Amino acid sequence: KFRKSLIKLKAIYMLSKDECKKATTKWKDTIKKWQKEKATVKEINKIIDPTAVFNFSQADCKWIHDNNKVSNFNAYAGIYDHKFILIIVPLDENGEENTKLKEYPTVKLTDLKDDITLTQIDIVTTKIETTLSKDLEVIERSKNVNLPTYNHPTIKEKDSIREIIKWKNECLEWFSFMCSSKHKRKKIFTSFSIPSADLSSSDEGAVALFGFKRSSIYKMQIPILVFVNITHKTNTKKMAKSEEKQITPSIETNTKNWSHPSPPYANKSFSIFN
Image (cartoon, rainbow, N blue to C red):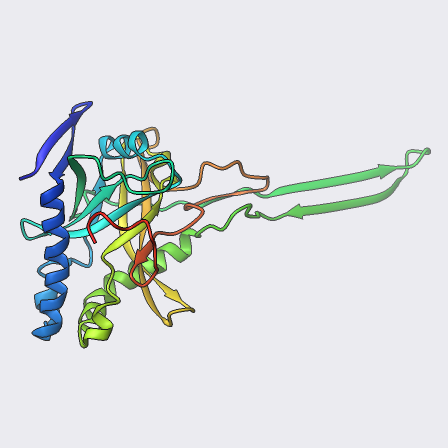
């Protein structure tokens, strides 16, 4: 059963390693069942709610920050007590999963607690120069506008909104289509590699939403996770971003990368629950 670990009066829902293994196996068995029985959208909806999210508490974010040693961590898909969950597995200094823990944090797919606002702040600099002659006559004027630039790959607010809405409208049909054959079913995700920067600036936790990103390599819709940080100072939610230094002009937006699902992406670090 779930064990609540209290950190600063907020609970982390922990599962033993054995229970985590059973949960990930349950997800894989459920996918196989959907494929075998040609599951309807209604049946899939019992597990996957298109509008549901993962609410990461401040304690969840702190646990990941304290236990994860590299720039990303792993999250496994599972089903526990008839609910879809993510099981968080930190990586060590070598980028390998920490398999020595007796239990791991879990976050369940649940309703969004309140309205959510994704923000993108563009910083534009305008440089105006006027040159005077020795006789104090204006001989030259110039105006240069420097638009925002990125010093690392990033995801814009507009793109994230489109990806989130696409998941909401199409995810049940996507699962149904992917379960139409064994070959397609094997491409359904069982885990995610998530940039730790997604959670590094969270004041009071974060919300993770599913989205769809089109892959030009695999020629298919790829499920991703979009993290939105909660900031108590403004009582709003801001899209997670990398902590790397930005050049000016800059854009404050989502993280430098997006979560990579496996499958279809291969990742050797996934081992503990595979």
